[in-house]
Length: 283
Image (cartoon, rainbow, N blue to C red; front, side, top):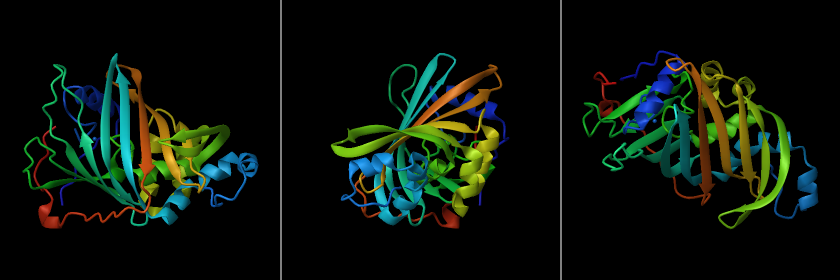
């Protein structure tokens, strides 16, 4: 089974960020509250915000599945790149399927086919990888071997990993009520610690979050989280940063995950061994 090499240095990610502007994914790729509606808003506002966001991942497991949209914005050297994704996620199996759309090339023409990504505990599978990979083959990446734990590399943050990162929240404030796509939500803002999140994460995400804690410029991750009246995470935005060794600066990455249509069918099948590319991956 092929494994894409990753040298562990944050600078590689920064280099990949610049490459994304010319049509490559990032890195190797191109990339609650359990109360019911009857609980009063006053009671929710009085709840400990840290405990509320800590429960978000467990609440998603009980919700079963959802459709998702992702957006990853990266700024480096005056260039801003946005990679978007859309798909479905099974929180019980911790598996997801995304179609990741590449940014336009510098000429402004979108000549790139979308990448299909399968997300699983400890692994990222990519189809239509390009760079010499046969069209009918998948590329497999060991996420624990990536310096960012695949929070950035795939061009989208795994939705369950995004929720589990909130288990590391150390400071959180309740901002107030708002709406997302017509759904009333409660807005929380705070900072999560990647080391703390790794200690509390599920087995499938633990090693990846540990890698991210070492690979980013800081283990402190600011976030904005939006939960509905069932405690389900509807939107979360994380702001990561890593050091660009070549330019001696810090690259800022904002990753946003939207969740909706909870309970949707989400049968995500992983590739068979024979369908995984075993050759060399062109950089």
